[in-house]
Image (cartoon, rainbow over all chains, first blue to last red; front, top):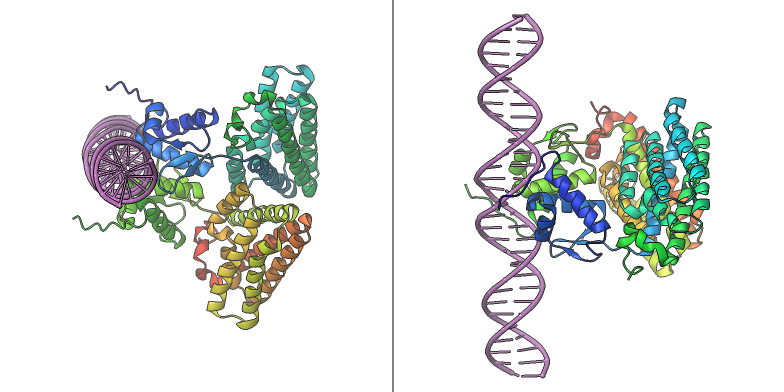
Length: 250
Length: 250
DNA sequence: CCCTCAACTATTGTATACATAACGTATTCA
DNA sequence: TGAATACGTTATGTATACAATAGTTGAGGG
């Protein structure tokens, strides 16, 4: 039974980590469920060592929780955990925006941000509600947030923001997906885009406090919309990222 | 050569993690230095598997950095990395204080905070500058910050604060140690204690913005003092937590 | 004398075997 | 009939062997 095709291009550890993360986010592994190492070995195709490494990393990432008696289980999140995570990310992004504004950013560095902004403008003008448009928006939005984070030029802060965004529902893309389930989606995206515009303006003019405030507001908008989306349960099956909510979905 | 005495009371992974962390923070492993797994096996007494698990955890903790070609090296930090990390923690603690204020905290829950506050008051009144007093202060201060963090009742936020404090120089204790090297140490501690007093007051009166602002200021005080301490290089050998600074100490 | 290529060594990534602890089940005794 | 204990099975923690890659050193040619 040596039909084990090993993909040498990427480490087994990374492969296992990606596979397990997919299983968790897709809901194949339910919140609270104990993860069997052997089963993970079966499904990922990696052996126990890389699987264990992946499990440790996913624990640190916040998707898994260590069980005292040994092993790991899929972490379960309350609705408040999720909104707190979003606000947390907004606070960190606010700090990043402030750092960018206070420390100064050259026109050259702002260029990609502005391009991204323009691309989103185009998108919002073109197709109102198509699935493709949303998918493009998610990509561009994530790019905008990543670029903004980079502008802080603070590796520790960038690192923390990445960690805070690791939880899918806390990531910019996550909340956009939640918003997309709402009837007012188009309006919401336009308001979000206005926030993007303002934060660039504030950074350009070195208004640190303003830049910080608008990013916080940006996250609060996301929280509000998430609450709305959770009330409108109809489209929620479109949101695999929310598979981690414990009581809310049961 | 089976004289390997295994301590079954605590897992080999944890043992290795603690041992390696000690080696890093004590400066036995210098910043930028590649960590040899085999050498780590020798010094920690654990075998390669738990050592590797410990290395992954320490990487996630921020003390190590993965080398693209494989293995890990001790992370090196710039002076700005450190001040950013402190400000980052302050921002998160500010959010925690605001959550506590906005969500309301019972008198019963504030009790331990107040006791801690009183204990620090006593300490500041008693012995001005003894080493024991500082060590007690470090403990009490860490306790105060931990209790405050808990008041937010937000597991995701608590988790993030813990992670931000994992870097020793970013932890409350770390900056107190830095301060203790300064001649103005006593004054600084008194001001810090005033911050503690104000944040409790703000939380009691449900003044979220004020609670948040004071915790941020608290961290900025720490940043300022760290800068001072770094100029006063005389006592810096007392600060093993700063062994991670790269250019500053070389 | 320097640069390049090749071989070797050392170290990491992976796989698996072994031991130990925990959980479930069945049987027995009260 | 119920509860408790013992045994068995299964899963995790640990150790180690093997394989592959990267880094280093030496030798030969330009």
